[in-house]
Image 1 (tube, chains in turn brown, purple):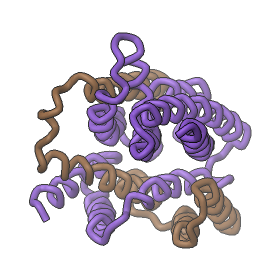
Image 2: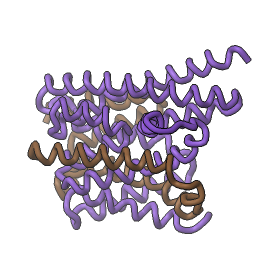
Image 3: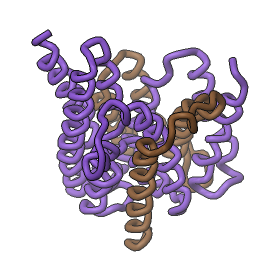
Image 4: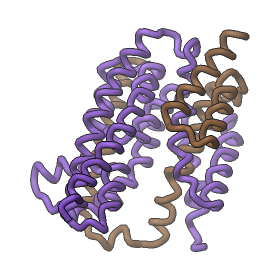
Length: 104
Length: 221
């Protein structure tokens, strides 16, 4: 990633995310009251976060690759089942992944 | 009730501190994706909506294009508009204060405000501002610490940072999966992402997964 790309992503993300927040304070209430829009909107974060888990944990460029990151994710999943707090989930995944990475 | 403000403040502080510490993970993710410490910190100062920030740097880390990164972040941020819609009649501010209120409108400030409903409008308003400002301070502080820490560590894979990012997404996703239906949506989105990965340019499967949300949300159930 070039420095220019990084700045563009940072700037555009910040402007658009703030714009969306501000929109909520200006649009009339009826606009977003459509049930279908609300149902889809409630599911979008779930779909995107799910896809991000895959893209970050199982993918290299355009290939599905099972490597040290999968071991980390498995431990993160176990930690979530055990109701561990967020920092513990992330740290345990990192430690596991690093161990597997160095053992290979 | 004279104790209400104190309880509201306590709620706000505990949420703000806990969520703020997640900033360490974002700081590390920004560096691992190739952003500078300054850029990573500016994300938290200017974008200030966790899942979107993670998405933007996550798509870039996955080798995706700038358009995919910005689109994923913006789509994740649209729920903040719905929060704003609920918070606008509560905070009732204009001009610069409204801009501030909008910037602080996130999952946590809205959540704490709504949780204060039994304590009255005053407590709700107080909950919104205290949580918003509190998360802002802690989130930015911990982003800086995470970014500096990750910069000092070097190779992301060597320290497991490349697994910390998907684990962070899983951690953000987990508390949302409150019903069987939502778990089915998550599982089918993951399966969809795996299936389309070989066929689409890097980063695009993330955006395309929004189609899964559209399919599941289209009909009433």
